[in-house]
Amino acid sequence: MTRIVVLPNEALCPDGAVVEVEPGESICQALLRNDIEIEHACEMSCACTTCHIIVREGYDSLEEADELEDDFLDRAWGLEPESRLSCQAIVVDEDLVVEIPRYTINMVSERH
Image 1 (cartoon, rainbow, N blue to C red):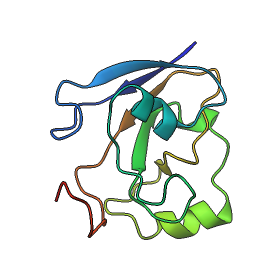
Image 2 (image 1 turned 90 degrees about the vertical axis):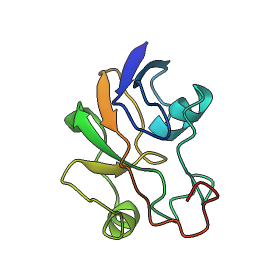
Image 3 (image 1 turned 30 degrees about the vertical axis):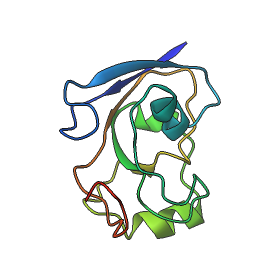
């Protein structure tokens, strides 16, 4: 099993978390399955930026983002070179450390 270490996020997991995931699952699916309620306004169809994460360790183990994901990432708040949409980042067999940014550009979120 692969481990995803989630750095502390004040709203979603104040103490951080470590989740186990099978290769082939998206980071978004793994977080949701482990009760980390990351936003995913488009229901994981790569049509928004609400599930934006920053991969602090293990970024190179992920497949490269495709053009559609890159286009949406350009709109994400707090974009960094290691940014990904968690719905599109599929876990392989290398552990990851991810950060969920504090803000999204989701204007309809009930948490804002």
